[in-house]
Length: 322
Length: 277
Image 1 (spheres, rainbow over the protein chains, first blue to last red):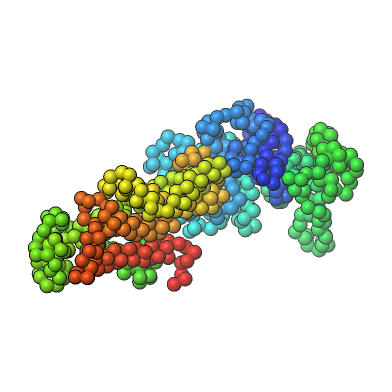
Image 2 (image 1 turned 135 degrees about the horizontal axis):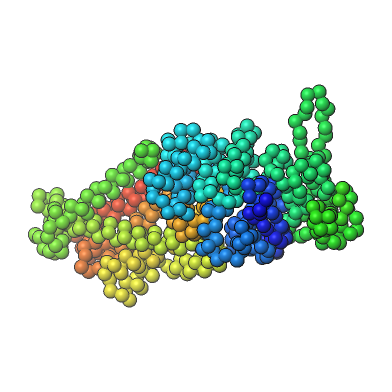
């Protein structure tokens, strides 16, 4: 499997009057062609910021990418001039966001917006772009696409809007799709449909996909590999099967124990275990392992030395992996 | 049209629109109904209104037709009001949009610049500009535009700061659109409603400013403005009060109409207020 995206030691900082926060603190990722990598973690762990960093669209003026490499098909995106980077966005790497309710411009029809997206990167006329848009809406399963084209976003349901967003994202057949919590804001039944749609499109277009989520059920259903993030760092990675069945990092273990499962018929109700304490402030990180203050197994070395993935044998950043 | 249905619900705004339409008709029809120069003597001086069919609004102390002056004055007032506002809106949108969209240093620089213009007393500033340059219509328009844009710039900046964080703008960036395209073709249409509302009031203020200037004799001496008529009538206020009252009422009604329209637009365009009435 050839890697479509290779991220090495990516670092993104937030600089404000409150100080400097390492939102993304030395992250390395690998995504193969047609493969789905899930990026998992709690709110504020830097997973969305990682997604935005890959497209170099961290919020200005506070966010800065300060180091690392983002290789897309071998080409380092961090070395591209801004104009060339714009050619990458939406064309080679596309992104969809969490809130389908606010991700579309309320003053334009969805057709209009998808036509714009197509014409941003492809030299096609209005009529041709419209024809392609109908095809795209069809492809993402919007019924009666020819007429839906001229609807304003507020006329569509959340699921339909997310489908329109996906249509826009795949309009230029990107090599990599970054999906930032694509189903979080949707009903459970719609979630399943959207995930199925993403899987289908991924097969059709052979896209690599980075699925950013906090929902381990979504990970189990969609991804082949998973990277668990905590406070801006990756604490564990591996295939979904390995990580979900045999989590080795205490944080991953805690995360799994805190996930509710549907009760099997006749089964007993299992009490959810919570992870005590709070995520450390990015402006005030502990010197050692970021999870140490909340970790049941923490020792002196955890509080003084940051564990690298190498410490735990390549897949887990822990001094005492389970 | 949904917009008109919403607007129609505000009776005062409809009245305002009707008044403005009358003024517009006056301005457009002036060269047809009164083809001559409004400065020319047309009859005996001091004919009171409604005394002569030929001069329905009477004549002034030099025998000029007051009705002709009012019609031609409507042209000047509307022209100056609209053009000055247009210039102010364009400058305000550009400055405000860049400041709000980029934030940080760009915002700091542009907003300090805006504040410099905001701290200058506007009427005094118009005086100085007109006094230093020649009092011609373009200079007056420019002077009024210069004192009017800061308010619009601040308004647009506020809208853009709110828009900048919206997901669909992030989406446009993620699609690879250029900043200029996002600012003017994606974000701006979302910010236009409050700009239109403010612009209608800005037109009213511009008309007032021009009238004040002409009243003080600092207007363009070649054009007949409502302020000019009031200024000329001031000297004979006790003999012929109608010479100040008629153009005064014209200014009052026009400015009032524009303010009512502004309120109506605000109700019709501002979704937060929808259904309150």
